[in-house]
Length: 98
Image 1 (cartoon, rainbow, N blue to C red):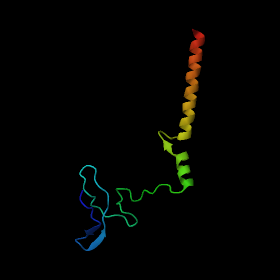
Image 2 (image 1 turned 60 degrees about the vertical axis):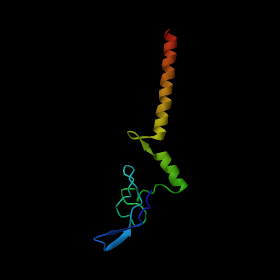
Image 3 (image 1 turned 90 degrees about the horizontal axis):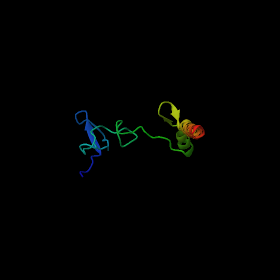
Image 4 (image 1 turned 120 degrees about the horizontal axis):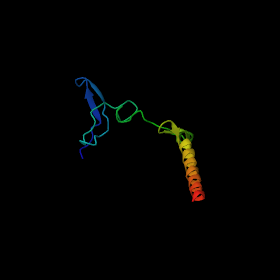
């Protein structure tokens, strides 16, 4: 595997900046974009994606994470319990009728 380049010359060699350390999955080549100031990655490879860092932020994210068509995980859990109850009621009615 070739060594990744750390620096990139832009504007005809007049500006030196850090080079993105992202690698293409398809070609295996290093990204040619300049890295963001606060990161080793460019804007396309996730330099701005920090996510929650504190325990409170992680917990809040897990509780409020949206899935599907506007349902939270808690709402989906309630829907699963309701469907289980409907299935049980259906089996009871079927047993009574036969």
